[in-house]
Amino acid sequence: MKSYTEIHTFGGGEEQFVAYTSQPLSAPKAAIIVIQEIFGVNEGIRIKCDEWAEKGYLAIAPDLFWRIRPGIELDADKPEELQEAFGLFGKFDQEAGIRDIESTIREARAMVGGGKVGAVGYCLGGRLAYMTAARTDINASVGYYGVGIDGLLGESHAIAHPLALHIAGDDGFVPQDVQDKMHAGLDDHPKVTLWDYPGVDHGFATTMGNRRVDGAARLADSRTEAFFAQHLA
Image (cartoon, rainbow, N blue to C red; front, top):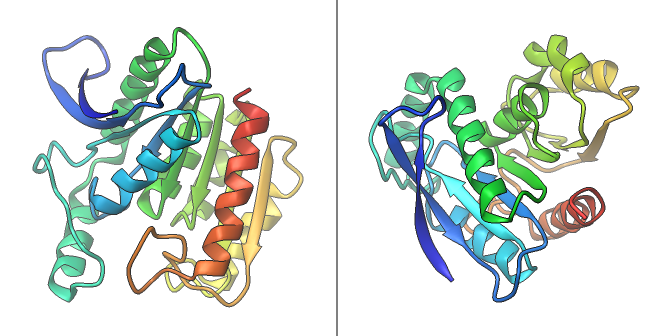
């Protein structure tokens, strides 16, 4: 069942935002928050939610750009929309975004009767998945090609629950020296798993479009599914 959930902002204020929600046909195993790219909660993100629901999870994708403009949906394959997305990234308040993810965790946990909640994010969402692992009580997190994680390594001590990161070997936004720093800072962390995908670029696991590399995407998604099956059980 597909719908939208209204979520009140963290702290009990009057403001609220919406999250695309996809429910399984039977009682959910757990909840998974799907964290958007810089393109908003577009068709690709909604499909990812639907796929998780088909696997038995409650899936919920909060509109994190609502403070800029609610309901943004952009296509990475259209140059003018790609440029608009870069502009939105510059305007986005990541601290407020993490608070909105916290609100979504609270709502999702209630929706599954106090059960476990995971998060999976892409691009900007991959970075936010790391921040969520370090700053919230999320039960498990997965980030795909997160940007700027080398600047967040000082928070790694706060990661208390399992986190997995998918790293694109030829990522134009995460060069080799940054990847090396990520490995140096996280390889020995008992809660963190890093997976490398040589020869693929940023966005390789997108649902559709020119960026997708099908073989690498399927491998990454199978690893994510197994990771959540283990840690959200």
